[in-house]
Image (cartoon, rainbow, N blue to C red):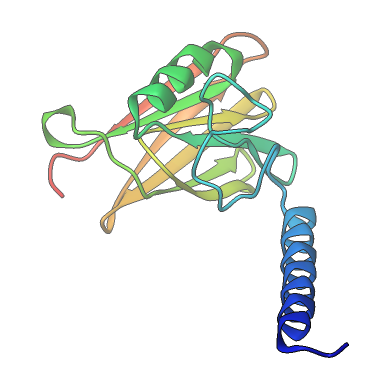
Length: 162
């Protein structure tokens, strides 16, 4: 029987199938661990403990965030497990987000080019010498860092005006 309610049910089933297919395709293309790279939450990710999604760029893993107190605490706790820990602050130690980070190795080869989603960015790099370029509101800074085989190297970036 071809009633209006049967047609609506059939259309709803087709729409649900298409939505699930699109969501599965987007997830399959993601390079994030535990979710998509556009997922700004830490809920349900494989990292646990409030840590934001770990992302991959080439052979470099990184995670950024820290806008909320749970996420901020998780990133601070995890710093010692990552070779490089970056922090971005402004006037009055105000935490900053949307900082463009570019890291180049000693041979001037770019190893990371990403936006930090919050005041903390943790980066897993091979041991060596690097230059970290950080840009916020059109103001650039750079710092030389040496990543060792053990422990964590920290670099703080401060902008006194926004």
